[in-house]
Length: 540
Image 1 (cartoon, one colour):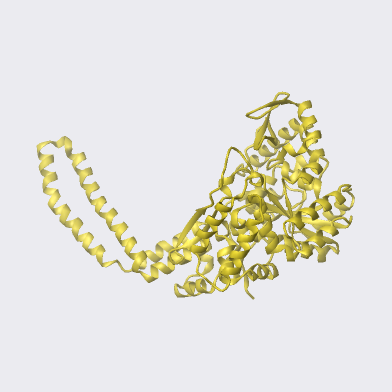
Image 2 (cartoon, one colour; image 1 turned 120 degrees about the vertical axis):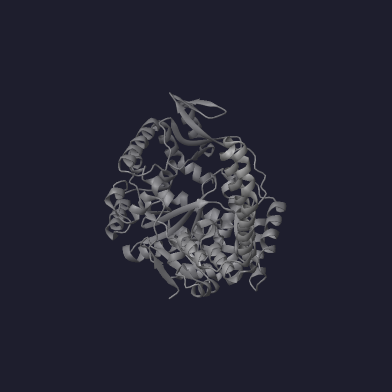
């Protein structure tokens, strides 16, 4: 089997204890995500609700997914959504360049596998939906890709030059031919030419050429990678989505103070339970954005006025605007979950550790809108291990678990066991010679002026520290160039723990696809991953 499991700690303690099913964390959610009864209960709840907009939702989804070239299998799943006995699992991500970090791919895999699993367990049709957060205007978070360079020992970050102006969202940011061609040239220049390179380049180039903006490029790529497995895509700024969201926008405006009050109470409970606060909430936050021209601006509530940096609205004016122009409104991290719940008959929402810690605030907010929070299922976390890395681990007598949990300590011990570089002896001798030459001068200075003792001793230390600094930099440089064992450690670190974090948070799927083909995505979808919160190891 090409899959193994590891229990790795999460930096986010609330998400960690929720994953461990501790009562202290579960209290903030409506369901235990690892109890099959939760899914039976949630299904019964959904059967009792009406989704009068199912037909309109399915039609809008079909039009969008057809436009972006999604597979017939996904279109058939959309048709199934018209039936009252079809449900969804949903998750989403920002529209990152080249699909962003690997965890975006892992989330899509988890959605597809969970939909299939729940369909079998619940004897009901469950379809996977990927929500593209195309309206996020933090372009600096999505405009780049990381890959490995220098014999795969160094992490390189490459930004795509996008014409960012003001607070424009990804779905409104034009994708110029010059920008994507220059970016792709840089990407492929850094990759080794393989039998797969031509196909990968054609895919990336064609999907970019067919896309009007960054969010659409992301959607087209995700459709090509996962459409055959039935993944339905939705993008948050689509006009039909806005129209269907209108009732919730109106409720958010009407109940704005209550939402703010509930979020503050949730923050107090989370803090009282001993968890760090991951979401900054204040009662004056309106939890909505409003478009002023191309700019997506945050609304705040001051008294009965709703204001952004350009305009001020009464509640009545804002309600009238929502009724007539819902396309001008946009959700934030709080209200997005309400929209998903309103639009889709959602059995489970799949989210990463950060999202879990945010959703801990929302239970009472859902209830205020006569909704029940869906099951919040922790996203599957995966590390891809190539054959070359396996051999490096074996050669270093290093276990993968040591790399992913405790590598810093292992590396310090390993460095302490290494033979000193010959130059280190020369530097040690130089320090002794400098001290022997300099010390008589220091003693003479102190004899002439006792008050200069401290300065003289500090001067001596600084001189020796400068020699040591040069020694450290030179030896490190020589190791990187000459020391095979050192290079092996660097390759392990760069590929499995880049920037001292999990691989999935930095690296992209496409350098791997360039080596192993697009079928790598299919292999991930078909792999026997375990959805129990453990970290999955996939041997490529």
